[in-house]
Image (cartoon, rainbow over all chains, first blue to last red; front, side, top):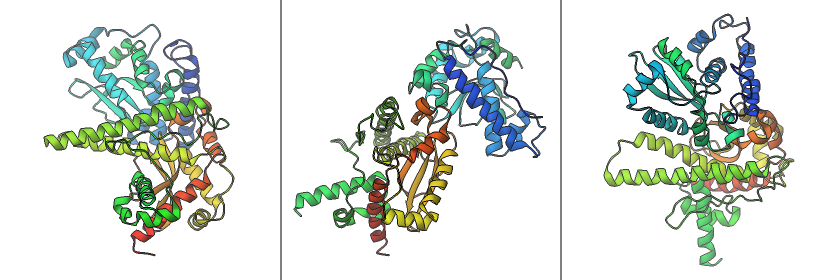
Length: 195
Length: 258
């Protein structure tokens, strides 16, 4: 059964003005869709056809199948990491865990922002829960994802490939990060943290 | 030739080779005066009074490639992105100097990574501007470049196909690179990931195509293939010819003649 492009969890203009409908049209309609299409063509007739997306990401060696599967998963996770009328300070269990780990939300926000800004080239910034139940901030390159490590639970992600922000922010990755905080979906983060 | 002229040429020649990191490997400085007179510098990258790297000007007006890339793309790319690598390279070198002074190498791993990233970013962007020209495109004239493209790729068309495929398929943010490999005295095509990964060490980039999304996104969005196809319409063969001649002459002499 071929993979299909998941719908965005909101309308294309729902994240404006922070992320424009034009960006989402390309990012979801072209980039994310291309990863789905490419993945389907690569796995056809292979041992990966019929596997779940997560299994493909965890089992495929470095290469085209892994890259496309991981990017399909990463992008879906990114869409859910944001929501309209979201952002601001975290609530619930994740708020307490962030405070316990970093002392304050601001300290966490600064470290996450710096990790995202300083990611070399294309990549992702992640908040993950480790096997010990602690929170950690990670940066991955290109298609790489913490999902490959079953001991970690991804909580949130911010896409810092240039296609995620170039239309709206040009070269200003820090400007994109600043606005991204106004979109963070803490409800999704709490759900992942509990899971 | 006056002494002053020779010194200037020698300086330029060193800049050209130093830029691509070949002078130490190939022992080029000793050869500089003799080769410069024949081939001339292909790339001159300015250095500041304290030896710091500086952003070289674009070799044409920022709207000169408008049929291919808009003025806005070129200005952002040169004034913001390329300038950022120059700044990153200088600040990394300053941090390394401080580490030496203090004898504290606890951050050396990150600094080495930053040096490779920003240093390669500066080299490749400098070459990228020269790899395109408002008068570019077409086919290379008869000369050493054409001869070596034929020898290394079967034909100019063979090069075009391999370079196009390698560049289109470069992973994420990367580059397509035509390089001179001095040990084999031949041309090769490599694809860089980021700026510095997947390099053939010692191979000297001659002509490069940037496929970081910032290079093309505002005009081509996700259509990287269209951008790479159109790159051939502005490709600056004459620059590659000049750069190859200068590079190769130094390299062959560096091996004691071939």
